[in-house]
Image 1: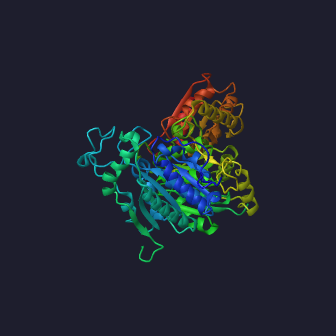
Image 2: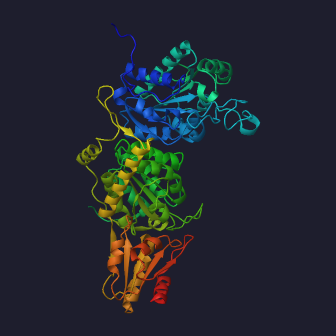
Image 3: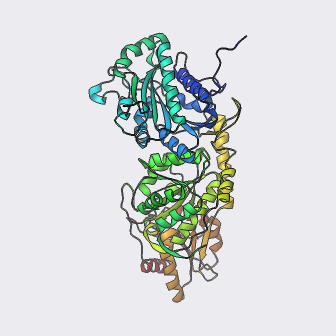
Amino acid sequence: MEVIATRPKSLTNVPFTYCPGCLHGVAHRLIAEAMDELDMRNNMMGVAPVGCSVFAYEFFDCDMAEAAHGRAPAVATGMKRARPDMHVFTYQGDGDLAAIGTAEIIHAANRGENISVFFINNAIYGMTGGQMAPTTLPGMKTTTSPYGRDENDIGYPIRMCELIDTLVSPYFIERVSLLSPQDINKAKRAVKKAMQYNKEDRGFTFIEFISTCPTNWGVDPLKARDWAKENMLPFFKVGNFRDKANAGGE
Amino acid sequence: MGEKVLMKGNEAVAEAAIRAGCRLYFAYPITPQSELIEYMAKMMPKVDGTFVQAESELAAINMVYGAAGCGKRVMTSSSSPGISLKQEGISYIAGANLPAVIVNVQRGGPGLGDIQPAQGDYFQATKGGGHGDYRVITLAPSSVQEFADMASLAFDLADKYRNPVYILSDGLLGQMMEPVEFKDAKTEKDFEELDKQHFAWCMHSNQDEPNHHHHEINSLEIDPKVLEKHVEKLGEKYNEIEKNEKRWEEYNINEENQMVCVSFGTASRVVKSAIDTLQEAGISVGLIRPITVWPYPSEAIQKALNDKVKKVMVFELNLGQMVEDVKIAVNGKLPVEFFGKVGGIVFTPEEVQEKIKENL
């Protein structure tokens, strides 16, 4: 029998700790496939966040550091500066990157650190049990916005791609969706592009994945996907914000 | 060793750190340590080193965490309020068994305090500072020369124990100029040795097949049984450090001492002056100057308490934070008195003499 699909080499055989229907596994796989295809695994170092993907250091089959909440881009900066010959990526959720780690992500991006940042936006804190995230949509109910997010009280969700796109230094910025097979294929192309630029030390690359959290949204995975399409995609528009490799990309 | 040069403590410790093989430095500006970050900004590019002015002390210490995870000699520096911001990262560095050097040029506190010399971070440095069970080796210099010498000692201890090390100085030592003589800089061969010593555990490139064990820099152990073992192992390391690394200076300690003083850092210099003057007047007072304030040299204090000693006096530039450690060492055998100044004020030799005389 011919093997036509298998686990990427860049993922270990440790079982994921994610809930059924969670898209972290898909995002992990896309990153790992890109690492395999670009032959980067042996020279890759990753940084895991605090959040549902806190155990990412066990899943990616390369040397990994576990960072304090939000500090992954600073940790990655230290790693890349210590080992400029290696490749470095961070994997972060919305609470980690867009709330407690806002300073670290903005300044790593602004320095144009030669790292790739993979940002999972599912509009909620997963690991701590479904609290409001900086990307929670207006009106969306969470355990800390039980009457719905009141944008007049706590503000609107933060669009990180748009925010980072105001900086001059970043090399590549793209928002992708994990909500359909077609979207996942597009996401894969963006991830591979970011990784290719990472391999060539071209600068700071940033991918935001629009994802879901069936468990804390309280819906089944298919409904979660539909809800995200209807509610998240209009606010968080997918697309490429910047690719300095393209003429006029700057 | 070279010739003596006149330098500020902040610059001397930076130069000594570079000579000791530090090629990565991350920090955020704060008074009174600014000359240190400025020296690194100027000199690191000249030795192909890395200088990054971080967006905050938090970011700086996390950059240290990342670089230390790659097994490199890495340093950060700050002054009291900034050291508070670094506590999160220091706890993670300790929890992940990483070597790193952190210089604190202490100023008056709490809060913003002022920018004059103080020793108010003694508790923070010696009793934890951040969350969880951990210890930081803490070296307390009392001259610009010793400040500089402690850079290489701090890196050696950090590497030996894979533990964070503080150099606990203050605004006076940072700003003051004194003659200093530097050790020879590390050679290419030294760097090769340094890289070898951490290769087994640090992050680097791998040629392994899939699912071969990779290197993780981590302080998370979700299983209580595993965390229990991890923290107990840290405890064993701290016991080892307590056994091996206590350092102190004995000044005028002899059989004629009527009093033993205990003082560290800048404060101890003033106490020495007072002791010299009193000795000329026929009053014999000795000084134990802890060089490591953690691990604490309790035995040195105990040994100094000969029959004629009636009292122990602690002199510090704080409200008496070291008194607890001195009392543990004295163990109730003699009264322990304290004299201190706060707010960035340094006591004078005359004030110290007076206090000693009052307590004889």
